[in-house]
Image (tube, rainbow, N blue to C red; front, top):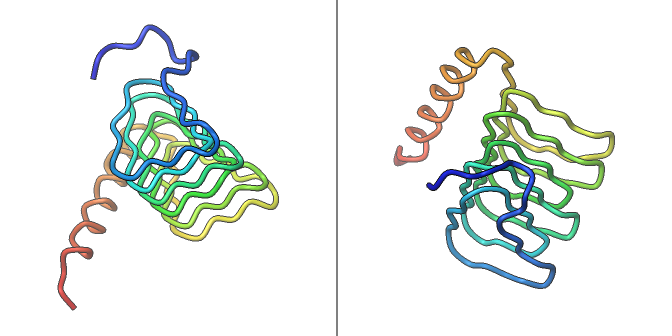
Length: 136
């Protein structure tokens, strides 16, 4: 991905009423107010608005969630789940904040130390990938 000038300018907006089906790879900061059916990957920050719905995994630098995500979230810096939000999936980040009435249904890995976080999250993701490939 190309270099970004800053972390505060929103590069991509998916507006309310918009729907995207398929995986997305975005450069920089993205705000989502519509629906995504697929995985989203960015090296920047993500804001998931209160009307947004994502059905897929989300990988970013940091994430603020006000809507609904059905999928796993991996954020190197932080994840903040606001009061009216719901996450059905695993959350992996160095810092996780969950507001009062937010819903989270899944595992949560939050380790402040960068080296330990990288090791632990890598092991977790690898074991999860192996379990998904096993035929029962």
